[in-house]
Image (tube, rainbow over all chains, first blue to last red; front, side, top):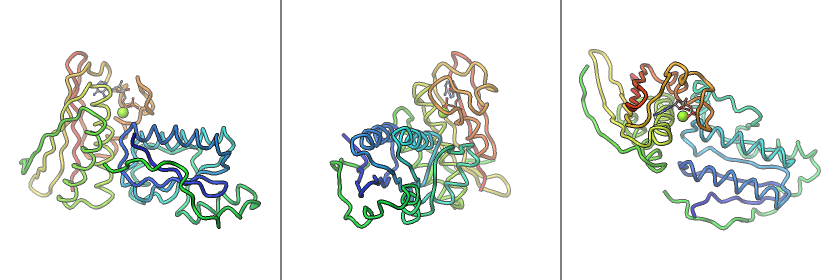
Amino acid sequence: MERIPILRMGPFLLVTIQVDMHDRLALTLQDDLTAKIASTGAKGVLIDISSLEVVDSFIGRMLANISAMASVLDAKTVVVGMQPAVAITLVELGLSLPGVRTALNVERGMDQLHRALGGTEKRGVNEPARQDAERGDIAQ
Amino acid sequence: MATLRSETLPVRSERDIVYVRQTVRRWAEELRFGLVDQTKIVTAASEIARNTVVYGGGGELRLEAINDDVRKGLRLTFEDKGPGIADVDLALRDGFTTGAGLGLGLGGAKRLCNEFNVDSRPGNGTRVMLLRWK
Ligand SMILES: Nc1ncnc2c1ncn2[C@@H]1O[C@H](COP(=O)(O)OP(=O)(O)O)[C@@H](O)[C@H]1O
Ligand SMILES: [Mg+2]
């Protein structure tokens, strides 16, 4: 089954969305991430959407759901790299993404997560990224 | 108003929604829309395509590059033969949904376009027209 890979980086999970996701793929990512937070005890989730050229209400809802579920599992979520044209469009669409933290890029997003952790687990960022999920076929 | 070019696509599956986004993007690029305008019409198209699949039971999209005396535009017409919408004004309201959505599709798509029209009656399917001028 087609999946978006989830990487583990120390206490955080990292997802880079690089394809124009169809709706079921987005729901699968939401479920996979929730399961992964629970199984790893991850304290933060970073979602890089810098390659996404469109965020409609479905993808917006997915981002909000991930944040909400992560928060129930005591993990913070930061969405990074939203393109300016996407941000402008989201406002006009009427989607405010309540509860979703954002950052300009991966580095700043990581800073936010570290700060949220109280800076106690900085160590994790220097560990090599480990591919924790089986890489599915993410080609269109 | 004259139609310069047109194309019709099926809108029946989640894959079709992705293809609608890609095709509308390509047309908007070819019409030399700016990046923000491209993103707006593609996002609006994505919303209405999903409604066509989820609520309309599938249908079609007709893309048209049009022009009037002074400008070019992209007109998108989605049509399905589904159950139709009983109260279009209500359906257009932000937050109204009969499904599991956010209820932002119709209202949001309207805000993202220059001209917008919904033609629907219960039992007669739904036609949604979106137009964005360059
Ligand atoms: N093509 C359609 N056929 C039938 N009903 C529709 C159609 N499009 C929209 N609707 C109705 O309008 C409502 C609002 O649509 P929308 O604003 O896109 O919000 P959402 O998709 O989140 O429900 C839908 O819940 C549905 O009841
Ligand atoms: Mg909708």
